[in-house]
Structures are given as structure tokens and as C-alpha cells.
Image (cartoon, rainbow over all chains, first blue to last red; front, side):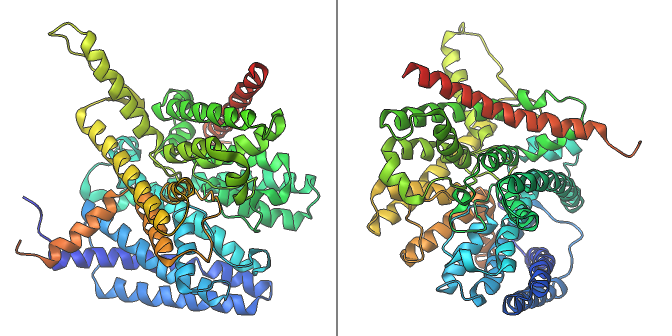
Length: 501
Length: 37
């Protein structure tokens, strides 16, 4: 029987949501203070207003509804989906007040794009926005990224194989301490990498002739965007701006590291066995899909004579491919070059890479390597069956942090999510085509939004239709939360409206 | 020196090496490809 939803359940969800919004609001104080120090008074007041809005909404929800002692899966998932939506509306306030967006919808689009680590941007005049606002854009990506990993490791399937199995906390009552524990580990890993990354970029920037302070600001921003596989950049030209091979290499490095499973990071850092990196099914799948799409892309680029030398192929081709595959969306070519220069093979190769995506329980989007790997293994296992004697039975295994048996349940859930992604990408493409965009470009942009990548072939702009903006916002949201949490929340609302059913 | 986790530092090193190895592998792949075409 399906569980009934009572007022107590709503109270738990709203209270959890309130806490998230309340604490989230405090992060606006960082750009607020930055603005004050840099004498960007107007910008810092926008953040103050945003902070107060979050503070009020959070405090109200938190105090009206009692803090739950116990929370179940449905509460966690529903609160996640709800807080993501409310946070989008609230975080869009300083964006909208800044005056760099043509409408509130545009501000919401950029906020959702940041939160979901997508990186599509329709902000106006990026090159002249206040530094505090620029910092806030990158912070949104970084925080959205950290948030989603906590959620992915604790709530989302196949969570049984994730962090919970490592820490050994599987009981439902212990959900909240488990979230706290996971969150702490993730912040530790990210902050240490932030430190290492900032140093890498600082020296690369100085080497390329930037002043140390400017290099540090850009370094921190670009690190946050690479590590959280976001795709924003401090200026409109994205990574092209730097014209720097060292920065491109470092970015590729951190994009790959950022798209790795955080459970794996934890395992490699704190357990003795380092070979785990190579043994994991996700690493193997990632290397295979990256190589296959890379071969396709290079074939297309060389055949059409676009890049025929080694270096441009690495700096443009491989960079874009890694950027797409890890769900980052940093670009070393202009958006229009995809269509005008690269041609169909290039677009298709990048589309495939974007759809495959990075590791699970990371900030990367797309199908995720574990699902692709599992489905591939399941197909092989099915074919193998025909070569067995009539009474023969085989047990297929895969390795993801620990050995696991490939059972029907795991295969089904992986295949279902992949199917949902494909349906979503198609729907997004159809909406694009309805708005008069050629199919291949509409599909490219739809996959980019739904897989939380952020590469753009020029469709995303402030001038695009509102229906398309809303569709992309929904796709980014669904793709980020991997459908299930959103569906749980929808059913949660549905069950509470039709209680007697 | 007890409070420094050398195991974790070694882990970070291994991870960066791994990411670099992926990039190097793809670079070698493209080099071979260029020779063939």
C-alpha cells in the first residue's frame, strides 16, 4: 500500500526546507562583504536584500514547523526538490536587482543554471559586472555542486553503493547525522582541492602575465567552475579569454577530478588501497566513452580539415570534449563555431559525450558512467546466456567501491534513468524546433541543459523564447536531481491533495 | 607529525596523476590517429 501523507510529513519537509534556505542565505554575506570592501555599494545592497529575504523565509519556515527528530527518504527527497525551487527564486533576487538581466525569468534561468552546475548564461554584459556579482555567480555553482553531492551520496539511487555503504550508515532514522557527516567530508575534500587549484591557477595566471591579485580572483573563479563542473567564467569569452595552454591543461585536469565520484575521492584519500581509482567500473566506462567520442570527434575535425595539427586538436577539440563529457561547459571556441565550423560530426560527438556524463555522486551531469557501465554489462551478460548449457547460471559482478552483483533491480533502475534522460532531451529538442531552431542545434542545446553541461551552440540567449527558457530551467532541474527526487515530491503533493484516494 | 594524514596526501597525488594519465592517453590516441590519416 502506498504511504499516506499527513500534516506531520509536510511539517517535516517544510522545516527541512526552511533550514536549508536559512543557512543558504548566509552565503550571500560573502559577496555582500566583498562588495563593501571593493566599494560596490549598489551591488552589495542587492545582496543584503537577498540575504534578508532568505533569512526571513528560512526563519519563518524553520520556526513555524517543528524541527523533525526523524526524517525518512521521502522527506529528504521532497525537501531537496522544494528547497531547490525556493532557493532559485530567492537567489535570483540580487541577480535581478543588479540590473544585468532583462527580466526576472532571465535571472531565474541563470540562477538555476548556476545551482545545477550547468553554466548556460544569459546575463548581459558580463565583462562589466561588479566583482561581487561575478563572485556570486561562481559561488552559486560551487554551492549547488557541493549540495548535489551530499544529496547524491545520501539520498539518490544507487545510493546503496555510494557513501552510505562506506560509512556504514544505512538506517533511515540516522539520515540527518549521515547528511552532516557526508557534508563535512565533501567540504573537506573540496576545500583542500580549492587550495591546490588556486595555487595552480595563480602561477599559471602570473606566467601568462596577469597581476597576482587578478590572477588569484580569476584562479579561484575558474577553479570553482572547473571543479564543480559548472561552466561559468568571469568574462564573456569564457576560457578563450586567457589564450593560455597551461590554464587549459589545469582546467581539464580539475574538470576530470571534479567529475569523479566523491565516494571514490573519500576512498582513495582515507583508505589504503589507491588502485581503487582504476578498478572502479566508472573509471573504466569513463575512459572508454571519452576515447570513443574522442576518436569520432577527431575523425570529423581532421576529415573536414578544421584542425589538422596536434596542438589545436588538443586545445580546442579535446578541451571541448572533456568539458562536455565532465558536464562542465567551459569553452575554448565561440558558440557559433560549433555550427559554422565544426559541422555535424563534431556536434554529434560532443552531444554523445555530454549525454554520457561523468561519474555518479559528483557534480557532473548526464547518464553517469555507472549507469552506462551497468547497462553495457547487462547487455553482455544477456548475450552470454545463449552460450551456456541449458542448466547453466552465471553471476555477473561489477566493482564500484566494493564488489557488487549485477542484479535485475540495479539494471532496471539504471536503464530507467537513462530512458528518462533520453525522453527529456528529446522533449527539450522538440520545444526548440517548435521555436524555429534547426533540429541538431535544438538537440545539442537541450542535451547541454538537461545533462547540466553548459556548452552552447548559440541558441541560449536573452532573446530566446520564454517557453524555451522555462523548458531549459525544468530540464536542468530534472537532470540535476536525476528525476526520482522530483517525482517523489510530485507524488508527495498529489498524495496530500487526494488523501482519501 | 601525527596530525598530518600522509595517506590522504598520497591519495591526492594518485588522483591528479590519474586525471593526467587520462589526458595523456587521449593525446597519444590522437597522435596515432594523425599518423594514420
